[in-house]
Image 1 (cartoon, protein in one colour):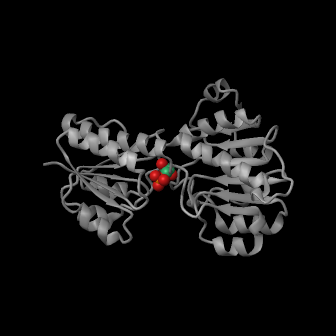
Image 2 (tube, helix red, strand yellow):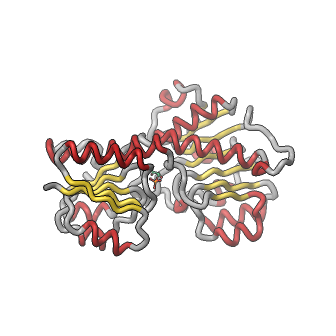
Image 3 (cartoon, helix red, strand yellow):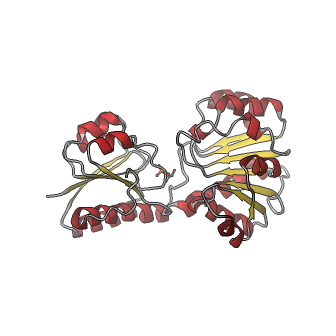
Length: 307
Ligand code: 3PG
């Protein structure tokens, strides 16, 4: 029988697991659930003899992939697949997919939530400020960026977007101001919301030359990936600018240094929370399960990312 492993160190909501189970079992497959595991060895043990796997941000490095003797398909229930070693997967003939767009509203809602939390002084009772009429720069206009734009417009924010891969008309059709360079985006906006993936082009690309262009006060919101930030430069921004803030869903490695010096202008969720809603779990988890069934039964490779 075809075995499908769901390996999530950050578990899906039970209602999403129920939906995934239905899809897998209705297809005549067996579901193996490994939730909230604490050591990579548990993942390695569980993946050894399965045909398919659904993961979230769970690290599928070369060691994990090489241990997966029967694996044919790995689906990242979510957008970013930087946690999966694509080269090692391709070398073993494993198809890797993601589920684009399925959790994007949840991440976008959190990005705006972080902004509100900060401008209201972390709800400490002191007078804060409002998002209305403030300039927001959306750095990358994919599924999450578009949802951020929609919600931010509801707040009355003045929205700009930069994305070299998205046609200008698409951005303008949404009522968002298109900007032609990343430098221009940062120069214009007091708020920047990051929605770029982590890859060889973007890693550490949000650096001092870019951040220092932001007008004051400047608020950087990162619901994307920690790796896209140059952390030494982030610290420099905190040191040089009295009103620079960083709000994040992905913990920086120099978190203790930032917290020690700049607590009032920094907030990071204790656990990555962007996609952690029932709706996003259901959407991404069930999409992943369906993609697996469709691939195994019909050879459908839509959403493959390691072509
Ligand atoms: C994604 O890439 O889909 C998001 O970062 C969500 O990641 P998560 O599934 O680990 O919460």
